[in-house]
Image 1 (cartoon, rainbow, N blue to C red):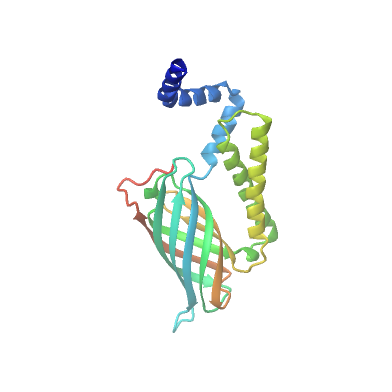
Image 2: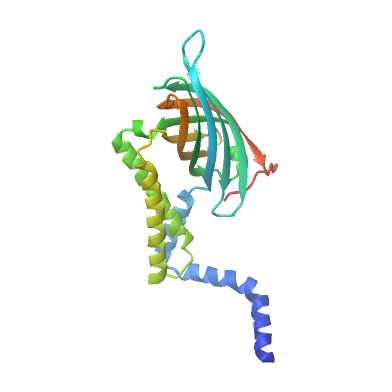
Length: 243
């Protein structure tokens, strides 16, 4: 019994050392062509998952009659690579087309390419379009891309696992769940579903699908604007590393 206890103690002490070594060994035992494919997939994958909410108001300027649009957003970015998170607030002003005076709130989710939260700060350009206003062939390509990203994220999550039938089954099951969720969102029949894009001059960008409730008009079919994003948490000087 004492011997078994000693072995258990040794294993618990050395586990932090041999666990990563075993993981690295499994990676290098994988055929090189598969390693290269997984590395390429990993480079193209988003740096963070995006969740946000917005308040939007729009109408026409008093004298000119030109359409205007203002929104205030709160967003959170969570990294699937490091587990770190950051929160942001942003204001955006621009113009809108295809709708009258409107006000409403929305929730949205998406993906962000920003290795560091500092890349996600400062001036940005935004555009959003009602998902139903997108031509059906482009809408299909957008959904196919989102489905592909969902499957690649799942594959990357299991990249270090053994290639057993059970792992393949779990990967397939998770991909199906993610794809079904995306399909239900896109086919919900709601005119308030929007596709959005935000871009920062330093190269960071994000894409999102959002669903909202408007008061008055259903809102604009297409909006473009410029804004400013500030990091409100954790306000690290060098920025939170997402990758």
